[in-house]
Image (cartoon, rainbow, N blue to C red; front, top):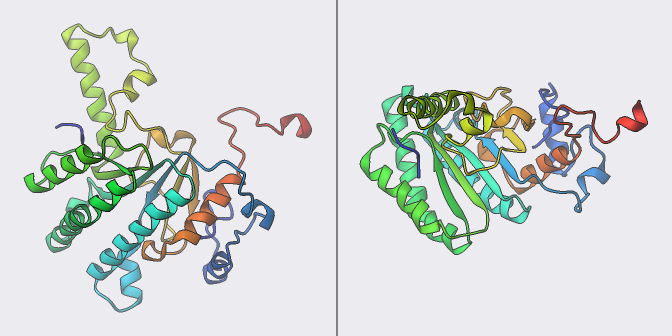
Length: 283
């Protein structure tokens, strides 16, 4: 195995039951629990790294009487919008959970369609991404991946390696538990070879063995479709991430959705285990 070279959160962990009303408010750029002043605070820092669990393609299609395949196709269009929005909004890293290690258990026809979508995305969008100074990184296992897809992913990374704009991280055949296990095995091999002392192993040593070792931890994780779980995505890296859970399905994700999620992020106080900047006032 080798390394792969909104619209409406009230608060983390909460999705309101009145989703249609909240989605209507979000279409106007407002987030419940945050003032219009917060949403309009353009001088607030954007998160450096946003990770997205793109959920709900099948449910989006089912709600419209369409086949699941159409939901996935529309989801690819939403990904293009998300990349443009990330560039516009000053995000430096955008990680998308494109295909999990567990997704191989889906029906073969659906897996085949998803592989085809990935190939079309690389084939059709890579030139535009490169022209727009986007760097592509792929994280996840390549074991069992078809040779043509493996080669295309390598090509995307190689072509865009020198770009210094947005880094688009594609989590493909990715599982966080698998990432941790593989990193642990590499450390164990170094100990067995005598090149690493056991007491030299710490959090940083483990982190350096991750597929995503060169990528900063996410500041914000967005999940669409109303689900509130990580689903084996960036388990280690999410330790201090903020979460925004959206009731809308991924194919409906657009610039306004992204902007509103960032407004929610800017309204949070990130304490990282400490007391926060307002502790002196609150006691």
